[in-house]
Image (tube, rainbow, N blue to C red; front, side, top):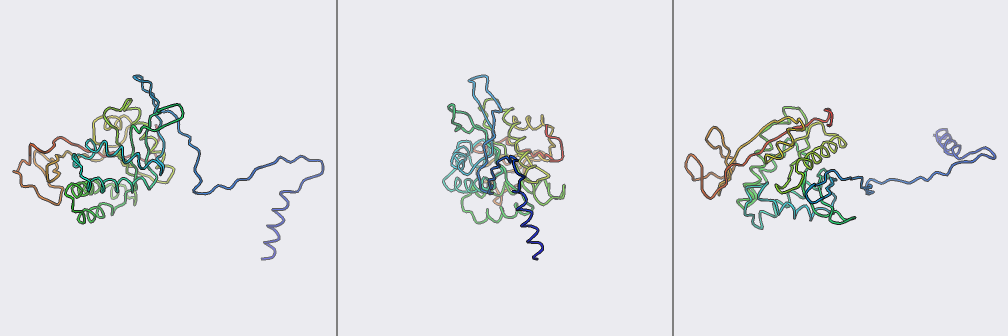
Length: 291
């Protein structure tokens, strides 16, 4: 033990020994902590030709949670059709679900430059979260404890979409980085923003050690942009939103994916519901070349 200590002491001391009349460059040693905020290396990734907007993509920070929740609230109708008229209880459950995802630190946002040194307007969001084998079961248990019908409907449908592609069994992995792309229809340069969000999410997955990424696309623009990136389409669902259930289409018939059964006829159509929604699941692999 004494020999080791003496060796270490001599090694440390010898680093500061110098020969006479020899100049030694001064070095500044700074300790880096795990919670030390890193410098923002984001850059402009898209520029609108209509109104000369500058858009950048960066990783969401804890300070962005209120703005992200407001962005989600404004675009709930387009990306969570089951909450077309969200109540306070529905917003609480959805806000909790989104906040849990943001807390993991894998989400990316695209924001517009309001002034020369101020980036504030969120244009698009890539909500990233770790998805394990048992997450669908946990969501179902959570849904059974929720009394709000729309919130229960949302959780049960989300659990169904998590389990149906069976990506964990197919690729034999324990965890997958799930990315939900939320890009409003009126966003300028939608394709460029979607490409930037997807590539940033893939880079994030590579940095933290994921081997498989899952992208959820709920509209044609996002699906087309992911196809251009040559991602693999794994699964797709067509469904209708009824007043008391979300029903999946299959060869002209519907399969109930909610724990409550509808009292409609065998066609399952209702004029007060919404028809024609879809969800496509794509996968990306870290070992592939990032284009």
